[in-house]
Image (cartoon, rainbow, N blue to C red; front, side, top):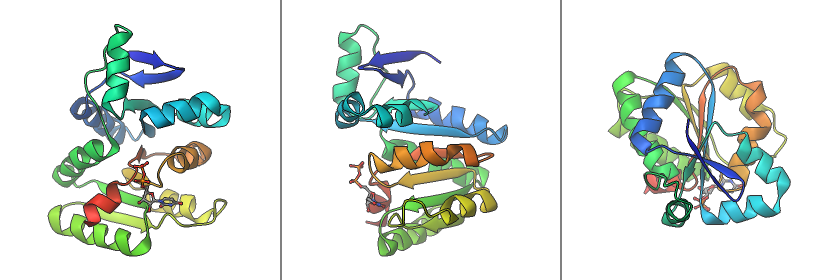
Length: 194
Ligand code: UDP
């Protein structure tokens, strides 16, 4: 996969539709994967915080979340194709999940917001099975979340804890999972809940 390095962050040269196609292949092959979306704030944070940089670099794909990142890649004469946000990936993937009857897991947001989002997804995408969900206000070392994901074996895990928590949580727990596509989606659950 072609990469574009911006201040130490290896961005993946990919558009959101191709990325989702690629992630579907990981699901079919039962390979695990980690998708981060980095905006300028995340790039600057990683630049100043080596632990966070390591978490981001553990991602299988890092997309450009913001026109500023796309502009920077153009200045470096190595242009990224488009801005790819967590929300773009999530909406495209929900369509594919419905077509293919994938099982999803939602991690993050406040409990009432999360429950509203689950209802909306169940209504709008009737062929998706929500394998489980947990709100994003848990004790950092609570092992039951990773255990729940490992037990229910969802195909896709949308992680909506905001930056930097979502990247840290996936990086710190990734080795415990045998499969699953883990995607950082920021405030997308709030948007879906309306
Ligand atoms: N959130 C969470 N746990 C936390 C902090 C935040 O679940 O400890 C959720 C919050 O409720 C919201 C999302 O993470 O649903 C972050 O949204 P925000 O718009 O701040 O994230 P961004 O898209 O800017 O990264």
